[in-house]
Structures are given as structure tokens and as C-alpha cells.
Amino acid sequence: MKHTIYAIILMTILASCEPVRDDEFGLSGEAPKPVLEITALDGNTFVVKDKTSGGFQRLWSFPGGMPANSTAETDTIFYPKKGSYTISLFVSQSDGSGTGSAVKKVEVAENAAQNCTDKMALLTGDCFPQGKCWTFTREAGAVKVGPKYDDFSWYTAPAGGLQDAQYDDGFCFTFDGLVYQNKNNGASVNPWDGYKAIPLDPGVSSFVFSEGTGTGGKDQIIIPDEQFMGVWDADNVMDVIQLTETQLVVRTRLRAANGVPAAEGWFELTFVRK
Image 1 (cartoon, rainbow, N blue to C red):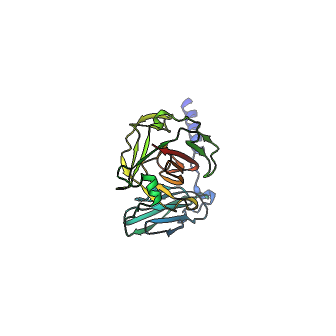
Image 2 (cartoon, helix red, strand yellow):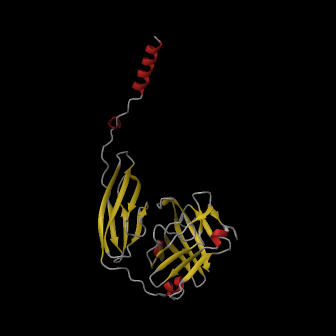
Image 3 (cartoon, rainbow, N blue to C red):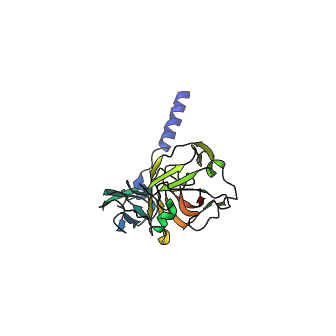
């Protein structure tokens, strides 16, 4: 008798847990194909725009470009090397119909040319072979964080407020070969692990100085996705706010550990000549 009662109870629970069908809510069953617009600024730089209706979440993929991923509605992508590249856009619909995708190809005919302009000279130490290194200022405001591009209300570092493992870092640019190197003395502060300094070898990579392609026509410094300048959770595409012989100020998005820029949040980082 006891087993019979248990069986009845189990059948009742299973019946109450029967899956709900999507069509009971009148879903369309198939997400619409995203609409993307691509405009060439020059042979190596493109502006992409998501013109999809009804989307609430997006992800761009730009293999071979800088940046390689983005969640912005409009973004600027730089391809330093010639070749054929695929741009992909994934958009999730707010009506619950799912995520649609669309792709387009762009052609880059030539490698990007980099000349020793006045600005490039300031960044790299007059384009001399030894290059030029930058480090965090010890004055207040070395790191500022806020929700928007020009709003840094979340946090401003006080004078001397960073860790020793941050003040000993050098972020170096060499014109010959367009070489970028994060000389971190073997350790960097990990924002995803309690801001502890952990062993890290960022290696040597490249950079691009792109004039006029940033927010409001600002110049940009672009380094590979796996690299960073200043703080590890800063995006690799940086708007140049100020560049002089002795000071470099950049703004860039916060990004997650997987390299994708956050939906909200910006850094302003201030460096001085090392």
C-alpha cells in the first residue's frame, strides 16, 4: 500500500513538471536575420553599424581585425594586413524568437602604412630605434573609472594609490616594426582574482596608431586583443585624449576576462614618460 501511494505522488509530480511548449506563447520560432551596414573609411578601416530592429543583445566578430569582438551598436574596425576578412553579427531578439546571424566580407588590398608623423614621434620617442616607454603617473587620477565615456564617477585613484606592481610597469612603443611591449617585470595585477599581482608574460606584439578614427574624431592606439595597456581589464582599442612629450592620456572600455568589452563602463588612464 505504501509503495502504491508513493507511485501516485511521483506520477503527480512528473505530470506537473511537463515542459511548456514555446508555441503556447505565440513565438515566431525563427529569429530575423540581422541587418548590418559597413562603411569603408579607408583601405584598412571600416565602420560597422547594427541596424537590426527588435534586438536587445548583440555580438560582433572581426577575426583578424582590431578589435576582434565588440558589443557596440556602432564600432570602428582596423585591419593592419591585406586580405579577405569576414564580419559576423549575432543579434538576440527581445521577443524571444532567438538569435539570428549575418555575415559580410570586406577586402583589404594593402598592408596599412605607418609614417613617422608628429604624433607618432611623440608616442614612440621620435621614431628612434630604442622606442619610448610610458608608465602610470603617481599623481591622483592615474586610473579613473565610470559608467560613460566622459563620466568617471565610479572611482578615481588617489595620489600614489596604485600597487607597486603597477607603478613598475612600462608600456613601450617602437616605430621600427611597430612593436608594442608590456614590460611588467614579470607580474601584473589581476582584476578577476582579487587584484593580486600574478606572474604574467604578455610577450611582444604590434600596435597601430590610427589618426581620427576614435570617438569624435580622436586618434586611437590599437593593440592586439590579448594585450593591454595599464590595467588588465582595459580594452585594447584606446582613444587618445592627450599626447605630449611627457604625458599620455587614453580612454577605453572595460572588458571581461573573455576579452569582450562590457556593456557599461569606461577607463581613463594617465601615463607619463618612463
